[in-house]
Image (cartoon, rainbow, N blue to C red; front, side, top):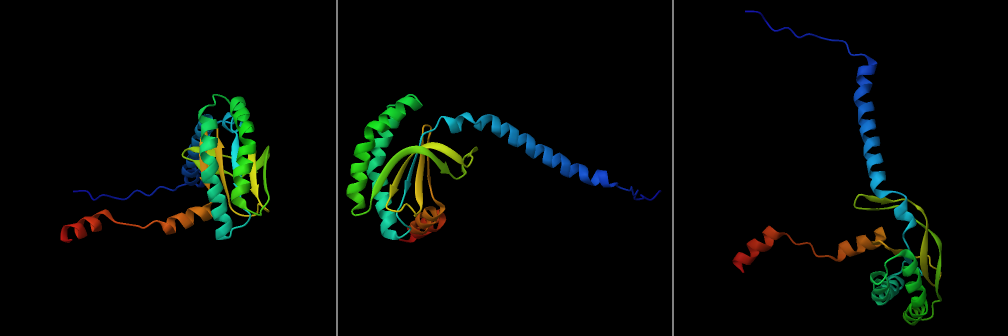
Length: 189
């Protein structure tokens, strides 16, 4: 019976680099496919709404959240009754004085401004869609100095984001429960 012999082959540098090159090519192809679906037209067709708090203090963030809760139904109604970016812009322009009045009454002694302009937004990801950092057509509601965390929303199409600091605070507030543990304790209760 013949023994099996291990055959050793020399690998060249090119053969070691090929798997890495293939991996990079696959990543580039995936990025190109995603670019086809996200496209630049999504960024051009959005009107965004951004609200800047006076500071990161708990009181100032609570004021921002209260304003957001009060004006959100008005903005959602404007979005739901609009069929185009132009119509949405007209509907929001009609609401500007009402939004300012609500925000001013909640903000108290802090100055509140609302303006529509090209505003810089950071990069965000929503599912497979990546919104690049860029200047977008936006309504900018500034409370006081506007140096606190912000909340923003792409109104057309509707996508809303909360800053990472706010997400952490909300996660800390949520009580974590485990289904299995709840089920076991329910059996003996």
